[in-house]
Image 1 (cartoon, rainbow, N blue to C red):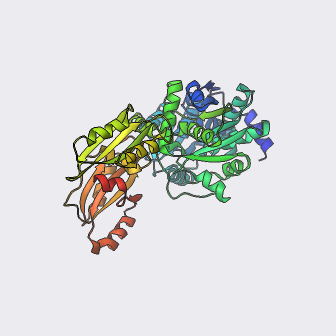
Image 2: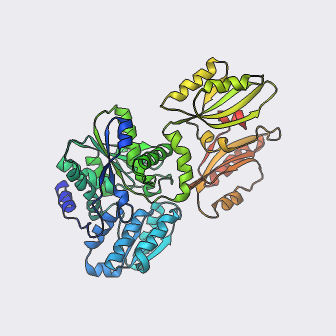
Image 3: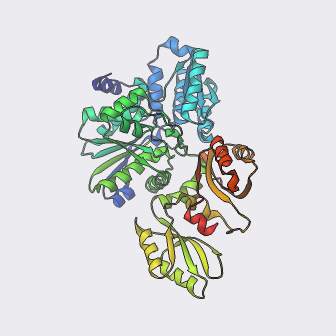
Length: 506
């Protein structure tokens, strides 16, 4: 299909039987902070709290009646599933929906609510791609019609109506529109329409660094299948983008930006401060990318539009989001400070912090001459952590800036204790596993080996993957055997044995 074909499809899409024309709201706080006019396209206010309803219904309403009567099937990480369920109930069609086992409970419950008796829910696989593979086999066996969440012209056209609304709602200058990318349906529809109607507007896609299939594909010139995807932004956890969405994004997107989990958490907080609405991680992707792009390009006085694509947030995740938002916005800095065990040195170190708010303070005596302090400090601007660390050093305190250290942020700040003379031959690892009931016990049973566990830290933080810090005592003669065991374990792992914060505090 040509660009003109897509424009016609978008203009004639059947979405407003079920979807609403969402508002384009000014984000006043964020605008003032960034020095640009920031507008939010509020797709999180759709009946299913996501833009996915547009594409799902447009696809299904254009299917022949005899095909619909046989039933439909889809795979989804949650939001497309709600769109299909809503459309199935509206059209009185039987729908089978396959979701990953990592899908948040709030989304599964919503699918049941929207679909009612017309919907059967099946959980399979760890990611969207796994669920898709299962659904494809089931489709063939049952003779159902697949409603693809992104790689289908009718779905792309339905989602492209978001761009049609934006350009009608704001006819003044627009510098850039930011759009989240999972499989690429929304980005393909938005970019294709915008570049046909107002080609001077930039359209930039945003992905997470650990689910960046589109960014990598566009960089290499062909579709790249990821071996693993991050699960925090579950709605965009796609290992392989669509063939058609890749073609359109390559032709019409200006760029794809990637952001990390901390930046996502900060963006969720930003939107909450302006709207009092809580976005899901994927829903805040465009805002996180917009902030990064505006800073990188030094933009001032421009109009920037971010599509807030979804608000199906798992409530349990809010604690994690709140904790990481300050670090993501670089409002909190973390340090390891070594001070002499001498009278007055502790007070002197505190004086150097000055009037800044202390967010974390952990202390344990190290030996007769020194002590190590783990301290968190609230800061007001990027780069301030380096200035504080330099101040510590200038006054004789050895200081290490841990603001970007994942081990420090995720584990060490919550741990107590210190070095143990019994922990000989200890190797330290961070391992991740899908977070669901029973996963921790399965992990522990898998880990039962001949090597003694000398350190263990796990803390549930509401995300879709769990992170464990584990120390194992491995004699030198067992190193090769242990490395083989670790490779066969099947969990993503990172050795932290040489990490500075581990050396200082544990």
